[in-house]
Image 1 (cartoon, protein in one colour):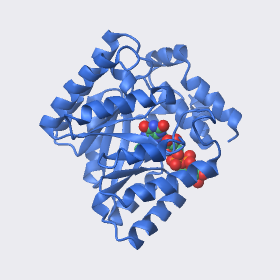
Image 2 (cartoon, rainbow, N blue to C red; image 1 turned 45 degrees about the horizontal axis):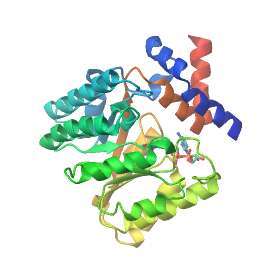
Image 3 (cartoon, rainbow, N blue to C red; image 1 turned 180 degrees about the vertical axis):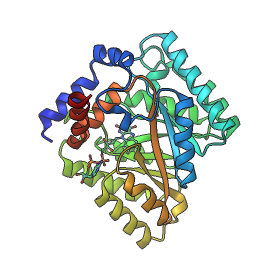
Length: 303
Ligand code: FDA
């Protein structure tokens, strides 16, 4: 896919009017293949089914462009209900969330308060909370908040986007934190991020290998079979225990590989998004993968 097409979908993902309208449409354009349900109750069965196959999960209650305190409080309460549900149903599942959902753009202190409430509940249930990484303009603030929260909580980690030049430096400060390694899903300038696929892939491979040699748990989040094979060979050569890392993939992507990896003895975690705010997430997936457009066409022309 050319950069223009990628930029087009990233542009759509940032369109506030479309994001707001899509909440009223229900799932359209084939989004239901990648977004597991509308609310927590509708995804519990999906998690149980994944757990039954030996796959752990992370749930993400989708939310974009939250700009007032009321919306952030609703998001916080929904995440707390999610924690109750995970606990009650004894799911093998952690939670992924975005700090902008919890008021990062409104007031950092308010965001920390919301996170503290979530983390207290999650710690009582022994559930891990992952801060997903968003656009670069939120990056520094997100790492600052992580640093504050790590002083009190151990059940928290984050994502490092290896398209960023500074990823290598930041990982040095995160040696004892559980990290999900990703390439990066947003459009960033060449002032802060590698632009070519070769450079981004090379940095992902280099930094993930360095992490795997350390002690803290690492989630290797990619659908790229070449990189997965390279990681498998690397852990074997270096006698790295399969308990110290996992592979992660997004719900609906490369499902044929999930059970295979598990059967080979690797830990595997499926990232399961749900909720009415699906548009931005779905547009970012279209930006990454042109083949997903086939689903959009089917939805537009055959329904
Ligand atoms: P990439 O798109 O680079 O494709 C590489 C190759 O893999 C392709 O050429 C193809 O051969 C193969 N391939 C990929 N997808 C395939 C498919 N569906 N079917 C067949 N072959 C396929 N980003 C972010 O900025 N912040 C975040 O918090 C997260 N969180 C996150 C969690 C999880 C679990 C995942 C998997 C990803 C994220 N991401 C993310 C997104 C991430 O940054 C990145 O944009 C996508 O994973 C795309 O990069 P890949 O390495 O998966 O494949």
